[in-house]
Amino acid sequence: MEKWIKTILVSLIAVFGVLLLLHAWQLPPFRTQVVVTEDAYIRGQVTIISPRVSGYVTQVPVLDYQRVKKGDLLVQIDDRILSQRLLQAEADLAQQRAGLAVSEQNKRSAEAKIRASEALVASAKVALDTAQANFDRTSSLEGRGVATQASLDAANSTLSAARAAVAQAQAAVDVAHQDLATIIVNRSSIEAAIDSAQATHRLAEIDVENTRIIAPRNGKLGEVGVQIGQYVTAGTQLMSIVPDTKWVVANFKETQLYNMEVGQPVTFKVDAIPNVVYHGRIQDYSGATAAEFSILKPDNATGNFTKVAQRLSIRISIDPDQQHLERLLPGLSVVVRTDKASEPFLSSEQ
Image 1 (tube, rainbow, N blue to C red):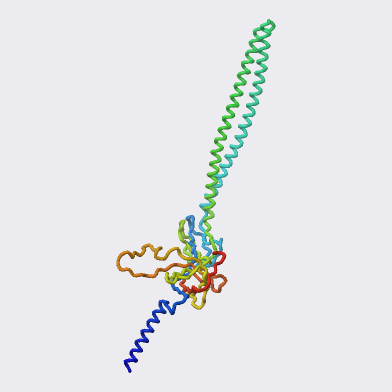
Image 2 (image 1 turned 120 degrees about the vertical axis):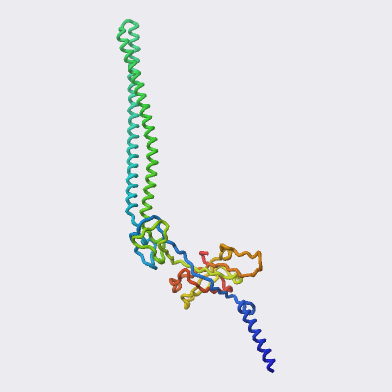
């Protein structure tokens, strides 16, 4: 009798053990469409705040973990030297623009001189025509004995002087054109100098603007790692901003992925807030398993092979308009649960 009892007990224990294994491995008849993972975390786009210019800090009007809005002043760097450089750039730009104005005035003067020289050429040509006609008439009269040789010599001298006056006036026109060409060439150089001065001025403005480090987005600050009087260099990490937009990254085993689709609803709990159940939806899958992104990838080509279930990261969007969303902080551990039998819902954003 005792032998039968022992046999029954051993059998019951064996059956219980098998059932326990089947339940642990989610095998029939315990297979379920609900999958759970504890390898999940809250994620967010944490923005690192760094200066773009070097200098001494004069203001830090924010505190650790303070909530800020886009445009709020976070850090003020001493801008006195950079402001003077801006004034210097403004003076250089004004000087170049004044040079351009002088060049424009010189151009107008050269054009007026050309017109005046051309008028002198026209006047000299009229005088030349008159002298030529007078010489021709005097020469004719002298041939008939009416005019004297002295009159003819005087008319010839007047004609030569008129010709010289025309040549001189034409030379003045040529010189005026050369002066205008020189002014135009110099104007191009001045315009290039103005462009350079404008660029220098804009860079100086940007440097002054960069002494004011402002919040690039709404969010909550992390630890403020800068103090008044501290010298900071460009690129130094001063603080971080955690934005309000957050999501969950859950790592599921490859054996759990069957029938999981984008849009399926999920629920999750945060270890730090165990009494609150949050809701979300599967948004997207990673392009590869976590092992493929590691620096040292596993090599199973040699030695004994032990199959290990790989994990795939899944991004889960958090449904809006839930209570206690402000308590979800990037880095917190969560437990994600999803029913693969539920119908997926694809929002317009997806």
